[in-house]
Image (cartoon, rainbow, N blue to C red; front, side, top):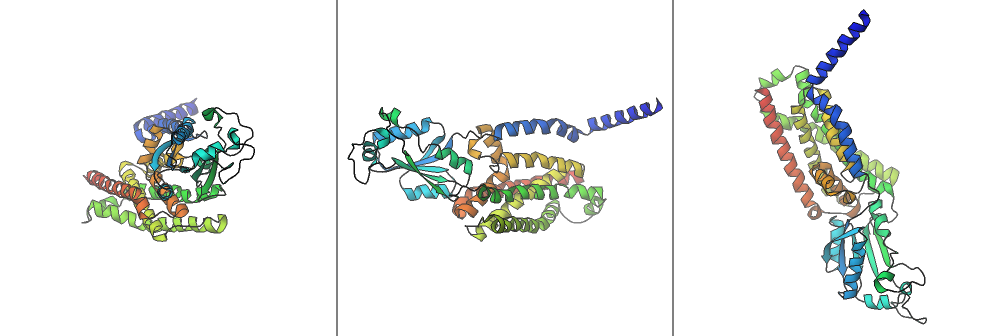
Length: 381
């Protein structure tokens, strides 16, 4: 009985401590809730509403009806209408759209001669005979997106033209860009840089200020002329080199083991990575000023790491997520960086195509450093 009373006394003590430790208690409740929401929103193999562009060179009622029929499948949403194929390719490189539908000038002639619609005469000849009525240019760096667009290749047009197909031929030709073999590792390796840097950079710096307090060094820092902002910068600079080393290791081994080359400029890649490292480190510093222990700092890292893996487009297509999930993902630095690094590594994107993401990371880093500095000053007071 005495042993049982002692055990119950320890149990009550732990429950009281857990109740007082609001951060840990919040983790107990919130982590299952967050995982349920994230996995429920992110895991969506039935891809819909992929943003695409249209280059309508026919400009006829027939082409407009065809575009409406493609949109009616709900697999794609036409978000851009471009005049030339060159503009369409630039939109693909900038990741403004994931595919482009090109309808040729001779669309009515191709439809009239299409065996798939049963309209072609037995002796139909000529360049347009039996040819697909259009072409899809697809960013196949994401294999799920490529698969969704390829599902439209043989979509029946008999309902549109009220004819019965005699035999199946492709309605659309599909050209796969950047990853024509649809190898998963081509998509995974660049994205893995964003996930690894998110985990390590935030984890390292989230414990930085807390570690000083636990080791008794905070009093010494208070008595020095070091300003809060200077301390913040001094804490993150050493980890910048570590982050660049990790990026070089992942992409280097990705090339040697999985044959994933870097197609873009190394200088553009370096600039994008530096900005992402800075954004991740500044977020880690904010966590370090909020946490009371290194354990709490690690727990806070989970709140960013899980969404960064599930909502950033690393594992599941960003375009297939519902609006609320995309809104949350847009706040995460990893979402912007993964899109940027895939643009450089796979599509040879330049500074112009990455400008939006770079500006966002710069703003995020500045806000993070300012908030961390203000909270650190408050902590000293």
